[in-house]
Image (tube, rainbow, N blue to C red; front, side, top):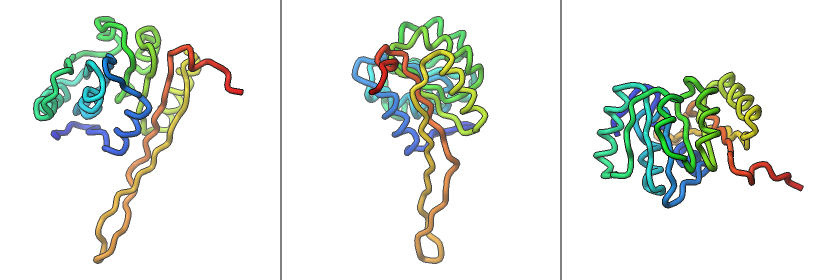
Length: 183
C-alpha cells in the first residue's frame, strides 16, 4: 500500500476502529480524511458503499491507486474539505474521521447525517479532550478506547518489543439506543 503523511492507519488500530464502526452489508459510510484509503478499503469489504474524502490531492491520488490494487469498486473518492462536501452526501449509516481539521463543524454536520456511529481516531491528548467535549455537547459521546501497541523485533538474537505511539479511538453514537440509561 502506498502511503502519504499520516498514514496508513496501522492494521491493529484499523481492526479496532472497524470493530467500533460496526459496518454492515448495505451500509453507506464516509471516511473523512481518508489519507491512504486503508480504512475505506477495509470498510468497503464489509459495507455497501464508502465515500472516501480528503482535501489533499496527494491523498486522493494515493487512495485511488490503493483502491485499484485492492480491486474494490464500491468506493467513491471525493477531493474536498469537510464539512462542506458532506452536504453532497446522502444519509450515512456511519462515519470515520481520520483527520481532525474542522472537527467541530464536521461533527455537527455528521450528527445530522449519520444514523448510527461516528468514530474518530486521534493521537494528541488536547485533540481527544476537545472531541470528547464536542461529542458530549452534541449528546452523541459513547466512549474512548486508548490503544497502546508494541511490535516485536529481533534484538541480539532474541525478541524485544518496540512501542508505537498510542492512539485514542473516540466513539459517538447518533442512534436513540445510545441514550438509554444503563441500570
